[in-house]
Image (tube, rainbow, N blue to C red; front, side, top):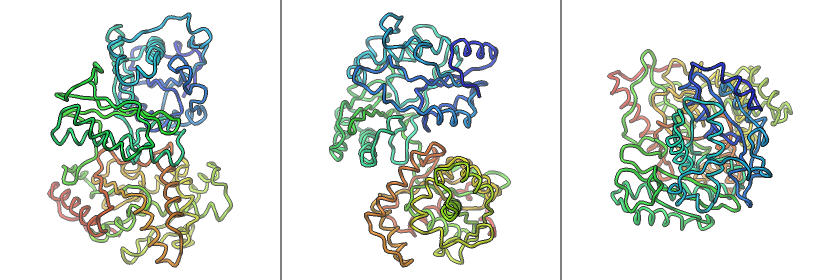
Length: 541
């Protein structure tokens, strides 16, 4: 991967690629899973991928956060290299002619006034002028056949599509779906500003949008009804300071009185001092809601040559482990406890005094550790696990390991080493796997993907009961705090963050018994086998 800082170096490199397909992903850095989804799409569709990283002062107002906007060059470099980016273009202000001191005396690109009447534009005067100016400059420098932008910034997307059309720029603008964290909050670099408490409040934006979407799906296409439903949900989160909630046409950005074909339900609000935006597309043929399957939806056919895999993901305390064990026992499938593997590395690191922020030592530990797993004698028994011949089944269940396991699991090298072992164990199918990224990262081709979820309070109570059964006493508030910290690590980690797979079936377990959850998954699995016209597979040891 090349890291280029000058226009001359960028032009020299892209000139060598003429005749092949070049894709551009413009960013302001502080990369997260949303950016990575654009990069992956670009690499799939183009011969060469250019990522630009430039915190553009021209799009920030006088009292906005340009100076403190998150910057993480080292982290961005590592993510781009791991993602297979060919070139990162990271110029300084002078190279882009964007020094605020001299910016007044430069050529600007003004978007059409009709696209600046709604949503963010009235609240951020000059913002989209600054965006359009730098984006046109990047398109001119790279001259890509395709450029990738996220739907989360819907007004920006509509403006860029229009300017490319009006200025006859030979680049296809590729809209990409919003990527969300497990609770629905859209990924944003500004999420880093949020405290743990504010992070919980911020999830209210998506809940409001979803309530409006569900109201529309129920049959009321009027803007009045859709917006009222969303506002009613916002009343449950008074800490959100609403800036706007609007329903507009996705292309023209003009207000709608009703949704005939398509509509964009968009919101902006402050959480503390942080301004966040989000939106949902209302369209009969396609929605940008997380494409989760409903129970009873069509399932894929099992891969030929292997028995189906069941991938069960979800946050800590949602019941994944106990459900996965029981499902595996009922269907006579192999149960692979991936969480126990990460716990084992965490326990070993704590025992050996390895600093939990030392990625190199942790990765080396994972590479050198031989793990062996064996299902318990019954679904109620934990998976037995050995590390380098020493059984550590009970040791890895301690509160200390629980506290730190997500931090260790977020180390890219550790995940890489353990994923190798997991894929080897599950390559022949006929297994049940559970964790936080099984369906999205480890086995994205699993035939049945399930995402179990539950409220924080319910999960804390379940964990407390488990610990009490083991003779440990921990307060409910302490457990809530631990789970909240773990959720934050899991959702914000740069590699394979916690979120439902696009084709996962989401099951809220708050008001379901374990048996009811098991039965749902077993039924889905048997439907999968029936669709393939096959019989239940034999047990695998």
